[in-house]
Length: 154
Ligand SMILES: Nc1c(NC[C@H](O)[C@H](O)[C@H](O)CO)[nH]c(=O)[nH]c1=O
Ligand SMILES: CC(=O)[C@@H](O)COP(=O)(O)O
Image (cartoon, rainbow, N blue to C red; front, side):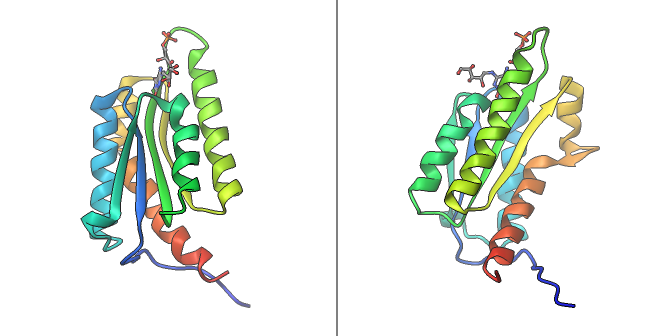
């Protein structure tokens, strides 16, 4: 049996983090977790991390696509926080966001980690942005690092 898997060290690789600013009090914690993970676990130098800031999660697919098309990066981490409100708007924003990001990864054959919270409450968002449910930004960064290394073996 052959098993292909990899670790997280990715020294010298270039990572773009595309950050949706909406709900910034949450998203900044996701960004902090992602950067810390890339540097501490992935051994990625600060100069090899690029942060791109955009308005909201709905804009993530277009921005991620443009970053992927630049061919400058070995992986992308997409961060945002979509928090359900009182209308169906949540479904449309989160649905288009995840669909669009997944399409970019397939189109450009590039690791695009999904670090966008889609939650029902601010409390759920806080739990997933560095408190009792971990930091989904850091988890997305871990995924990006591992995928860089696994794809290199395929
Ligand atoms: N409600 C949330 C949004 N809404 C804004 C959209 O993402 C978009 O920026 C706007 O519709 C203009 O095109 N965005 C989030 O990231 N999170 C939300 O909870
Ligand atoms: C995810 C959203 O767009 C949401 O925060 C907007 O809130 P509302 O549905 O009350 O307009």
